[in-house]
Image (tube, rainbow, N blue to C red; front, side):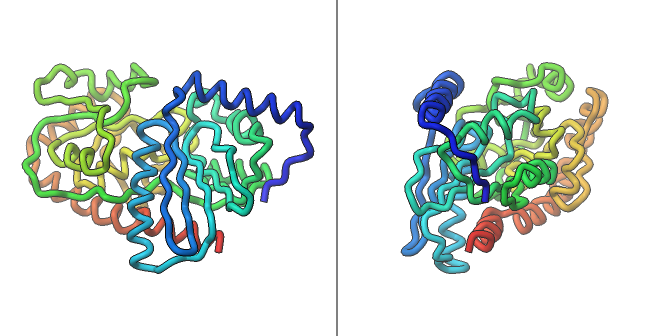
Length: 315
């Protein structure tokens, strides 16, 4: 358990004001979402910011019901889980188990090494019982800082192949904070095609899963801080779970995190074009290859399994 030294009331007030100011400036006042999952002796409150994190929170909430059906009530009391790269929720009630899921650096992606001090330790009014760590490097940093940790990569729930006809290309994600060089390397030659679609408006799991199932080729980007610190983002898990071919920039830890070799990684536009040509020339063979990836991701990285790991840790 992380214990903070005594901080006077004036300093705590200043830190709270700073936290709220950052939230208003970066996120907007209506960007915070809390999803509450309830069982007779367990309440899981998942707090998230931004479209991608909220989509992950919805997956975890849906998986909570499946967890209860498979394993029963974990009798964990009230668990407050803040997820993502922004300052965690500080309005915690007495008796709650406080958990922060650290897989992102939010607006500090250019300086990920500062995240622990500048964000987490600025929340002087929160005593975290556990840090869930989205990569091995994040876990090591958190351990060295004195936190109790649990290796906890991003996962998936509710994404599956639907057997619908696939065609065209696309990218699913926000249009902000993207590296122009990587966008050009991946999507530059294809963004003007009539069958290319960039979507950032879906708000439910079913909508996004259906969209993935309509695409024959998709592309993925990872923020540089996340990539350097070994985080595999949600787009990888969602697209692979849906059976959708995905091309991404080279990622140093993706094979280790997934548990299998993932070859569809590129370091230049020529390699992107080679993979696109390969997929388009043999769509049936490609989709058959991705069925294997789909089975592994859905089996090994489902949020039901992630929740089992979490409740076992805090029991």
